[in-house]
Amino acid sequence: MTTSRTRVLLHPDFTVGAVDRRLFGSFVEHLGRAVYTGIHEPGHPTSDDHGFRRDVADLTRELGVTTVRYPGGNFVSNYRWEDAVGPVEQRKPFLDLAWRTVEPNLVGTDEFLQWAEREGIEPMMAVNLGTRGVEEAVALLEYCNGRAGTRWADLRIANGRAEPYGVKLWCLGNEMDGPWQIGHKDAHEYGKLARNAGAAMKLVDPSIELVVCGSSSMQMPTFGEWERTVLEYTYDLVDHISMHAYYEEVDGDRASFLGSGTAMNRFIERVVASADAVGAQRRSDKRITISFDEWNVWYLQTRFPGEENLPIQRDAPRIIEDVYSGLDAVVVGDLLVTLLNHADRVPVACLAQLVNVIAPIMTEPGGEAWRQPTFHPFATTARLAEGEALELRVSTSTITTKAHGEVPAVTAAATLSDGAVALFLTNRSAEPVEVELAHLGAALEVTEGWAMTADHEPAVVGPEHAEKVAAEHWGAFDVAGRVAAGDGGTTTRVTLLPESWTALSGTLTTH
Image (cartoon, rainbow, N blue to C red):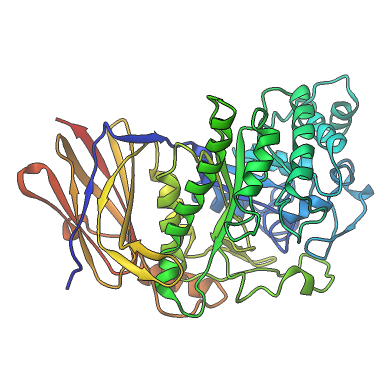
């Protein structure tokens, strides 16, 4: 039995905006095993001459990651980047206060940027505005992007890198609104510091893009007021404001969890409204866009004990290694639908994180690397979503949720590039749904399809469970069995499985 029919109207002329490839970014922080035994493990059977795991790099490329944010995260607010450049044998470990871990400093700015360069990934660097400030930010930028003849550029050259790295994306600190942040500041303190640091950085390299800290979540008590105050100090200087959001199933509330994309959508719209209000007050034609540089499913309330409860540890401890289910993967796919539908205002986004820490890729030290279930919708979306995001009109029933109120039963996004179309649809309901794709004035041909369905089993650590979920809940399907032409060549019918995320590819051309 199907729910009431859903109708999605699409046409090549109705667009949201261009899909920036940086939307498919990720995040590597010095946290747990994200770096050590994650991307970097000298002596591993697959490691390259630089000590980086080739199996992880191959999966990163398959995942479609375009941008990686580094080195934090909370880690950056207690970090001295100078201590992690130069000869590795001369570097000194330090105690990272954010994650209460002794950081060996074996991987630093040069190692990360050269890894990113080899893998064709755009780096997104963060500066420490927690315990440091303008001088450190300018020095790091000069080290990365400066040419010979200045102190920090010459140090880079002495360390073996002659050419500037040319890093374009820079975060002005991390989650400075959060009381957990080392060097936490109120909005006025942070706004002034971000303005001063950003202005100085632009004197070094005017071509860079700056990301100012927005709220750490929509639940922060200062949300909204934080954005307004910080942007009043930095509006004319910065390009993007950050957003961070994590979602999880709480107390078995499956419907609210499946509706998480509605919360993300509201968050984006409210931050956009806050930014535009500051712009309107200033009578500015400039539009601040969003760097959604931390998002994912993270069982923060139910599995993480909190930073303050972590013991001091060494040797890349296993911290926040959430194991994911098919249900989690459906939600990740739906969150990607939301991001695509805001392509005009969200050019940058980072799935947090890349390896081991709430990640789509897992590893064992000395052993294998594997794909978590959340890997599949991200990789498929990154591969298919190109060109322009289409502005869709979706008519569907609603589902009542405890956390979000009424949410759409079906969500949809689409992209179009030179006639190649990709459609992404989530069925949040527990029943199959028949979707009518209405494309009056255009011809739609669907040639391939993939689907992820939610499971009802707890996730289990290890590659065997991930492979089982992929075998039973993920894969390509026979388009002829689920997609059919409607009447008159102006509609196409697609059947969505219960609690599922579906990707379709084909062509959409005007008559």
